[in-house]
Every structure is written in C-alpha cells, then in structure tokens.
Length: 479
Image (cartoon, rainbow, N blue to C red; front, side, top):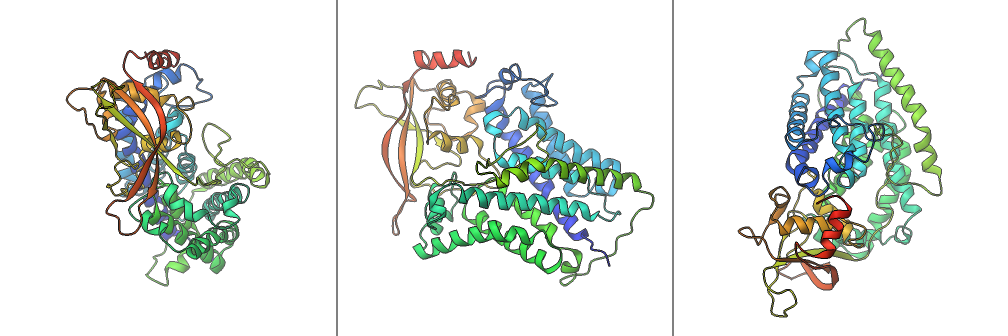
C-alpha cells in the first residue's frame, strides 16, 4: 500500500494560510511607517536605484501608499480563502490562483522591503509558499514527491542551523549558549525570564539537546515510517520549546508546520478515522508540472548543499530574487550582553543638567524596566527587531535610525503608529537623543522585569535644524 499524506496536506495548507495572513497583516499595519511615502526607508527611493531583474515586484510602476495597503489587504483575504478551503474546493485553477497570488504579492513586498524584510523567515515563507502552489485540491491525492520536497526543506533548515553553531560561537561548544540566549535574544517574551532562571546544568542540557535536534535528528526526517515519525516528533517538540521561550516571528511556526510532512495517514489513523481520497482521472498534466518542479528543486539544491559543507557557511542566503531554494541557519553567535537604545525627547535646553527627558516606548522591545516582555510572535515587530541590531553597532551602520529621529521630531503619524507611547502626542519635542543602556533580567524577588544601567550615547541630541541630521537626510534622499 502506497503512503498517503492527506492529513498532513490539510494541516500544512491551513497552517501556512494562517502564517500568510499574519504576514499580510504585518504589511497592513507596518509597511507604510517603515517603507511608505513618509516612512523610514521610502520604497520610491529604493526602486529608483535597482532593476526589476534584481528585485522583481508587482509594485514597479505604482508603489503609492494606497496601492501598498490595498495589496496587503488583498493578500490577507487570499489567506482567509485558503484557510477556509475555498480554493481547494474550487479545483486546480483556483487553487493555483489563490496560492500563487499570495506568493507573488508577498515576494513583491519582500523584494522592496530592504533591511526591514531582510530576515531568513521571509525566504522560508516564500520557499514554503511556492511548494504549496503545487499541492492539489481536496479531491486529488497528494503526490508523495511534494512531501519529500518539504522534508528536504526541513532538513536544510535544521541541519543548516546546527552546522552554523558548530562553526560559530564557542559557547555552543562549552554548552553555555542557552544561558545567554533567553536574556539577549532579539525580543524576549513573558516566559523568557523564567527560562533564564534555570539551573546551569539545565542550560547545558538544553544546549546539548539543541545540538542533538539540529545535527542528528534532521537525518531521521529523510526516512519514511517510524524513523520519520521520530524525526518529525523531536523537531516539532524543539520548535514548541522555542515558541514558548521567545518571540522569533513566524520562524518556529513555519518550521513546525514543515514537521507535518513527517507523519503519513497511517500515523494519524491511530487517533482518528482517515477517509479515502478519490483521485480525479486524467490529471497527467498536473503530475508533469509537479515532477518538473521536483527536478527544478533538485537542480537548484546544489548551492544550498554546497553551502552546508563549506567552511565559510552562509547563514541565511537566497540564490535568486525569487527565494525558491535557499540556505538557512540561526544564532551562529550569541551576544553575552543586551544593549537597548532608549529614545528620549525634550522641549527644554538639552545641555542643561536640569533638563527633563521623556522616553518613547516601543511595542515589543524592552524599555521600561517594570513592563513585562510581551508575547507577539508569530506577529513580527520589525522596527523593534531592527532596534536590537542597531544597539550592537553605530548609527553610521544603521542610518535609518537618524531618519527615525527626524520623523519623531515631526510627529509623523505613520511612524508614530509603530510605537506604543508617544510622550509628545500634542506637540513634537525640540530635541531628541538616543541613549544606550545595558539590560539584564531582574533577580528573583524583584518587582521589575529588568535592571538597567546607562552604557553611553547612541545619538547626541538632535533638532530638525541639526547639521548632522540634515547631512544624513540629504545623503540618503530623505529631504
């Protein structure tokens, strides 16, 4: 009896549709503030410097705010249709149009998203979403080759993450990385504090377990039957642990739905009845497309496979602007200390010691020491995440931070919508500065979640007529 994966197909497609919905809500809520006409990195300035061949997008001719927002809502509606199975019940053509439409739209946003869309999970969503286009509607049996394409993707994702750790930070070798991870990860969640308080031997055990799941278990997902169940089960459990201990956007959720490919209908039939599939006749054209795509994946897998064995392994890399077969990896290095940029404004004299500075609050990243880290994943706070990166360097390497200051000095509405609290809602401040603080989780018994101490200045006080601010804005075409 041949293997069937109809339960896996349903779970995979419905879960992926939900992740697409989250991704498009991300567009609707944040794209204008980040990349719109009045955003931090306006798309119009970027598109004039690149070619369509390098950045294929449907927004090449029209990238107005209204078009971008309408496209985001349209993508969300397609995701809703896919989740409720409207496309599957309507036959091959509608299935391809719905899933292909989501993929084209999201690719278009990613390719003009610049640094705010430069994350590995964007490529992972696009690669996974492209596979979904080839899945059949509900009255056609799923070709097993599609399941193995998903397993090959899961293998590259997990094994690439494991190898990048061995080639990266020495704390992965001495089994101390997980002690630092919970506190210094880009965006902790409410349980991260509790995970950080675990005993040292527990952190070493979890680090060893990470190596086991990412270096040994991936080989199991390449086998059918019980061995595949073991591989999928360990991988799924690992993803669930990462989900409950931090906010890594939809990376772990996407990885989790790939694990469904490890469980055939024989596995699920142990728990509930799995009905037979009535395959539609005369669908040889469809099978030609499926096996043609499988051959394409095999051909394009050469670069990712070569990257896995390379001493100079790249962490998250796409080999074409369509993000079809990519290389993955995560946390090759772990930061030991957590720095946060705290943005403050004042309407007084910034050089007066008595000057009162008021803090801006972000929605996701740490700010006030008394505020519990929020649970936001699978939603993604893009500005908050980039602030974490910026805190590890200089504003010279993150020039958009200077533009952020300008927007705050102007109380620009679309940018203010990205923040949780604006202390100058009625009238913008005269000056803004960005201070650098060292953050640590508060000890047991503290009423606060964090303790912090000032570590220096990230940006000096700036006003709208500040020469440095004006120079940056002219250099990058923001004024």
